[in-house]
Length: 275
Image (cartoon, rainbow, N blue to C red; front, side, top):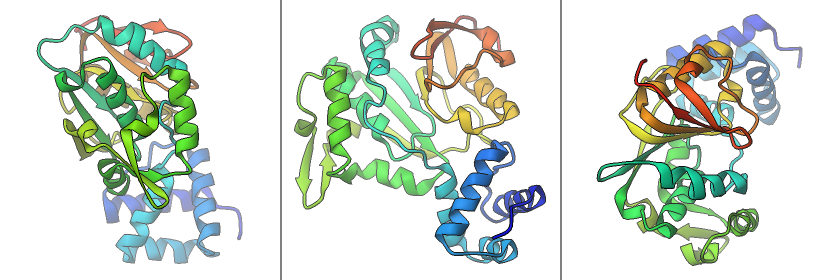
């Protein structure tokens, strides 16, 4: 297949927006180009016009493409040191009235949601917590809400959990059936899974903690700024934001609303009510 031109990427972005209402215009072009090329190769499509026609005419095909672009590789307790700081330093300092409110933005297939639920359960806070888990992709939300994963993926999940210093064995939280595991539904009894597009949608409430890890890296500077503004609007003074280890908010204008509380783990506290 010939090299994908900038004008072709723009046509794909426009087609997806018009047909499915999903806006990729502020995604990093280099990342989007790689994912388009990979998707074409996987589906043995050699003509960009054929690809765009299928996006327009076949909703299911377009949804599969959106999933390919938006799904990131994830694990339970990914970067265990991050979760240790959350458990030992951040969450004990959060002051909340009756309910600890947490937003997992761009939660993908939900591994971090279950990680948080287990952390809260072991800290005795699960019943006092309310988690909102959002993603642009309804298919990964369905996976997250079911809590069914492959047995194979539990090897790395269990290793991360051990490094985190969990009180139990990870296998105590799931049952095995054939080649899959089903996580305990009680862990997500207070989780609200909902579709939300960080590129288009704004704040969805007030939270004590927002996690959006390894997502901003796929956005261009304008969209990163917009998303940080959304998070600032969604956090009260002295609430916290956690992002990915390779990400930073320091260049954003809205960074003035935050102070860095963990350089290594990229955790920030909102220090002003001014937005």
